[in-house]
Figure: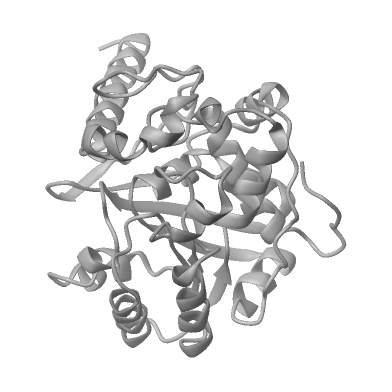
Length: 312
């Protein structure tokens, strides 16, 4: 097979794999859409009854090592987007502002040292389709640019509706995450069902990898209307309500870093003056613009020393 033919075959295979992941991670969207009737009432966007709106900017560097360790679970490398594509998306996305989350390096000392001084940093993100959206933003490419001395390698481990209630079971931590030898594990999404499951995963990780650092993140997107603070606070994944308080306490108890993703994400969408659905690809998940809001929040949290001010 000629080189151009090989390239075309790879593109076809990568497209098939991305399609399979998308199909599996969007199971249940129709049910969730029914729950979001209030936000849909004044929506300028009509989502398909099944699936999602087509991507304007499919990732230009799709992962070549896409794996399925078991049915419905997916493992692949990221950032998936080039800096050029990220900048293109960010240049045309709706403008908004948010208060940058305070960087918290207390329990990320190794991560901070490697980022600033250099060396390998293995990052693993664990969760659901929202975590997949977050990582597909390509923010890891921005992190590499901000910290050029570090050799950052990032892996995504997700399943549709995947929370720690799933990852704690069947030896998944030991069989899938531990062999990756992560220095930093990010746990987030909107599918966590209870704090104790997250605690169990944290302790399994620490038992196998005593030096691993962990960042616990609250949820974003989903069906709660970010324009309504009361509704958002009631969402089971929200950093502005009881879940956020409980997750922050868990982080303190288990020596993990904590990031409230909910507040800056909601601030950005509100300050844009636009309907939230302009940042969605379906009733639950982010489109390219919504993904970049998450990238901006994460980069504000991991900002090099001296970076300050309102984030846009």
